[in-house]
Amino acid sequence: MNVELIQYTPDPEKVIAAAARLCYSPDPVPELMEKLDEEKVANFVQKLRAMGHLSPFEHISFQFSIDGVSRALSHQLVRHRIASYSQRSQRYVKEEGFDFVTPPTIHRNPQALERFENIMATLQEEYQALLAMVPAEDARYILPNACTTSLMATFNARSLMNFFEHRTCMRAQWEIRILAEKMLELVRGVAPNVFGQAGPTCVTQGICHEGAMSCGRIKALKKEKGKDDPNL
Image (cartoon, rainbow, N blue to C red; front, top):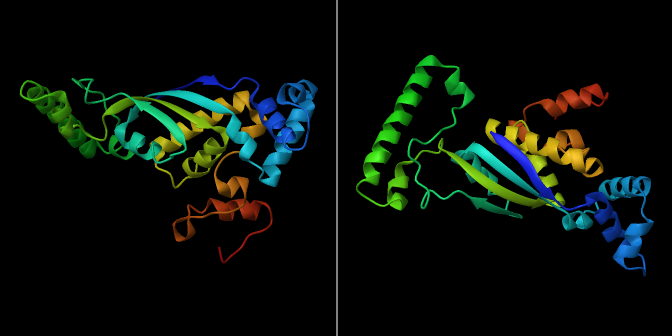
């Protein structure tokens, strides 16, 4: 998996602060931005987050290049609908000798791994045979979810925070959780006051929405803070 932050809104945190200040000022945005120094921006962004006043965060966006992930992951990713996606098409790009992602549970099990790799080899062979008979758009119907793909994804900051809440959670599947963690590391580097506290809700809010399916991390976190709840 390779993830790169290829572009983002310049001075993202200052843009957020200026957008929020605009609501309470007669001055235009350029003048507001001139008056904002680094300390004011940091304090204002943190205050907005604490207040839950997040609409100004929608004014900044981040574009990612994502390569070498499975189609299983991409199906999960596009469920985050307040974002824009472009993906390599299996209709127009032939997947001859396609690469594939092997889940860790399969990789650790020699018998499962042998069977999995044999299936992938068979699918590669049969896909190649079908390409000689039918268009690629029809041959692709036998391609597996494990087949790798490439995407470009663009999120605004508010949507990204929601994405991180769901996909850095231990209940998220391993592959998209790794993706989310890589993306979070990248955006923290350019907007630390926006994303410094981003992550699963058990960490950011002290709440777990998974109920009986919780991984149990919330209990450990509350215990560390002296707030262990035996009924959780």
